[in-house]
Length: 316
Picture 1 (cartoon, rainbow, N blue to C red):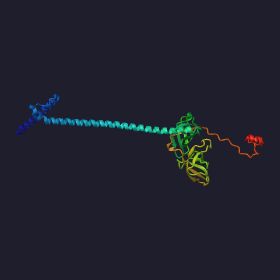
Picture 2 (cartoon, rainbow, N blue to C red):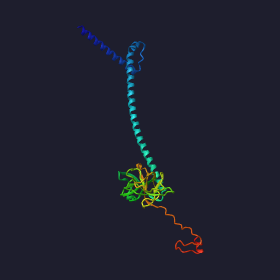
Picture 3 (tube, rainbow, N blue to C red):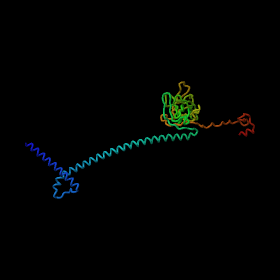
Picture 4 (tube, rainbow, N blue to C red):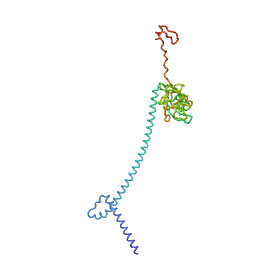
């Protein structure tokens, strides 16, 4: 019985406490809304009694505002970070495109400069669109064909030097045989005036990146560092196009000739744009001058007859 009474008393106390809290909150809200929270002197006791509850409500409100502000700030920072990442990706793509455009512009500028300097050639610009590379062949595919005036056996060059020749001209594309191909054959000559030794440049299966100059006499004046250019012999490659530099020399298997290993002027690993020579207007050779004749024994260079003194004076 006593336990039951004690329980009823505790429930009553809890009920009064809950009612007191509700009334207190109502008063706080009422006076705050009305702007009358400053109680008169007669109600100071009530204010003192409500003060703990006011502080609790104020603390809870501050905490709620702090948490809400923190959540809002985190959400805002996340969105800003996401936007910045997207902007960085976009700027990175734009930067890559700009760098590619600058590189292409530099290549085309050199091509145009070479085309203007080599005024003896008619050239068509082309872009490399494919490669065919294995042990026995060194081929590239360009995006120009017969519709652009391209035909078989036309030389292909860059501002750096000789690339090769067209071996299969299609309507809109063509195959080009590089000078690295072992089946290629380019008539060449040492550019140095004291040498002018001729030879044939062809690809080397054992060293695919470095062609070799063969058929060089054993005692010929060829040294490392010599510049090798096309000789113009054979009718395919015009004279004077740079092929490469002599990197080293060795004797052939027979020992009667020597071979020059060349460092090609063109970097074939980075080949992107080329020029096809469609026509060549090389300067005609200088006219042959007749040798000086001994006075009194002059002859007509056409008929071979001896000239009289008067005619000899006229010839002079």
